[in-house]
Length: 504
Ligand code: MSP
Image 1 (cartoon, helix red, strand yellow):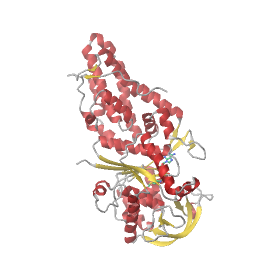
Image 2 (cartoon, protein in one colour):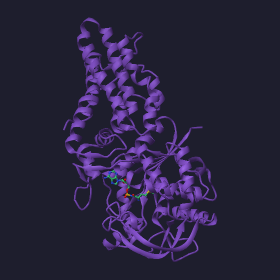
Image 3 (spheres, rainbow, N blue to C red):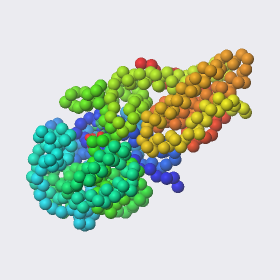
Image 4 (cartoon, rainbow, N blue to C red):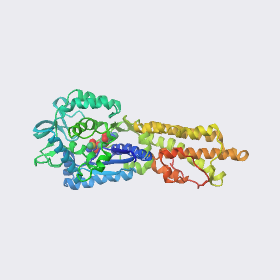
């Protein structure tokens, strides 16, 4: 039986159109999901939309439509983003779906039956933009610490006894060192929990766009309890008839989130799960934020980066590569058009694309359009190149498990650059006249290296890797990670390729 791997993106608020931040979180998950599939895991890759709460209700009102009509429409934009970026999610959850509502009510019942919910009254600050409560001491110049405007809320509310879970959470972080990654986030969360947790208001009565609290018509659930539960709903938590899927995939292997929402995932969520007697996810990873040419991205500044526009202008694989290569994952990064163009021209067109183009053209001209047969004997420099990926597969596995995408790509680009140097040094065009056999070994070595590189690049630049592997006629069942270990047979007829990455 294959090992399983469950990976999730945050579910996106449907108050607005998708932007580069949304595309970035899902892209990171897509690369991991694709890599794990290549490594023969049974993957469940989930994304979706967060459709309840005051923020969405207000956005619907401002658009003059009822919330249901509004969320149906906006959630389509997020589905369109999946195609646009070539994302390979296995499921898309919407929090307005029946099965999700049922699973919210199920976890609520579990929490209340376990004695972790009580009815009281909330009075304090609430920031609609963050959908979060803030205490008096957190308010800075009349605003939330995130800069979001706050409003005073006073209403009856159910509370979750978060304070009771403080020590248990700290113990859990202590015995699961990778649960919160990267390390800086872990430290930040530990000191937040150590500073003392207050019980959390988990229902609202002043508006109605949410999941109804079981047995109390006046309350709807706090949107974050509702939203976090999506990770259970999507793997059939509420399916009482059949718990196979839930047993198979829960707990999740990784929840990928942005740094702004780490507290909800690394504090509230594990506390809810412990209180409901459910197993905890294995990891929460918080990535950094993009700025645009040095400025914070915001609608009011009018500098929101539209992923649809970028892909139209530069190409899907180009954008996927840039986003994960340019900035070490976990750090903040700045989006700059000139840097994007540099990366496309130098890394993609001049290095990877050119390597493939050169090798195929030489074979086309000198070997009657046929990739030479696997030779019986290699020189040391041929083997060094051929083995540079093959001998390091576990390093690549670890880099994906540690979410070090930029390092993974850097390592591959070292091989690409070595392969380009190898062509110059071996000069196969010169060998043609005096050592035809050696020329064939060199060209074979290069195609074999390109094969391995392209297998490993499939998660990042799926269209391009597919084009290359198609071009050198690698069968689909030989594109797995373990296929890197085979060696090409050669004797394959090929045509002249068109450039993979047009220079900009
Ligand atoms: N609905 C909640 C998540 C609930 S998960 C149970 C939410 N949605 S969101 O649409 O506001 O944000 C989703 C993701 O986009 C977050 O991970 C956030 O970090 C990410 N980004 C938003 N702007 C971003 C940048 N400028 N840069 C990188 N990622 C950013 O929060």
